[in-house]
Image (cartoon, rainbow, N blue to C red; front, side, top):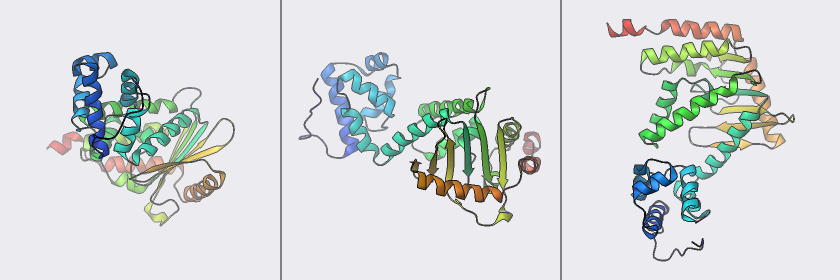
Amino acid sequence: MGTNRMVTGRSQEPRRRFAEELRSLRDQRGDSLRKLGEALGWDWSLFGKMERGQTLGSADVVEALDQYYGTPGFLLALWELAVGDTSRFVEQYRRFMALEAEATSIQLYAPSVVPGLLQTREYARTMFELAGVLEEEQIDQQVDARISRRDVLLGEAAPHFRAVLDETVLRRPLLGAGAWREQLKHLIAMAAQRNVAVQVLPFSAGLCELNNTETWLLRLPEGRTVAWVETGYKGELVQECTGVELLQRGYDRLRDHALSPRESTEFVQRVLEEVPCPSAEST
């Protein structure tokens, strides 16, 4: 099947156009949704929801559809239009995750939430549920993927990892006391690893650099450093020397105001002691 497809006669609204093309391609091939699911290895109901415009699916699914239908790049281009500016975010975030796996050291500042590499399963699930853009089966997949990323901190070749957590991170709990206690205990356990340092930036430090931006600095094997900065709405991979240097200086100044790793562990322990045990919560 050729890749030059005419737009005339199709919807010009990207999300609707994407759904129309999915239905049209499957109709031309004469496949049922179930047969399509069996051929590609995804639950067939996902493709039905995509054709009805209820979900856009992921880039991996769309790439598989492009290959199956013989339309290399066509459906992915429509998908990128349908998701809008997030397509660039997806591409850059994939690149960031690849670099993260190579990094010899990782430094980060988390201004408001527990960073992904330190999250428990329940915390990660809550974050994806609050985003409100994924369906249940997609949330399960994303939680599994996030938890598997924690493996980067394990093993003999694990990078040195330093996380500076704003006190806000520790003062905005999960609603379930049991789940929140589990998350705090996990932070303490991770901080005890030989290659991990966790520091708390207390409210008493006042306003500091990078105050509303989650910032990651990755030191790569060849000696260069790249950065990832993210707000609640978008993220960006920073590779230019000038931009990375500015972020590194800001991070270093911010870290100077943080508690030491030992003091930080004691701080998290005190917060944990303030959380009621599940048994006490239910009485």
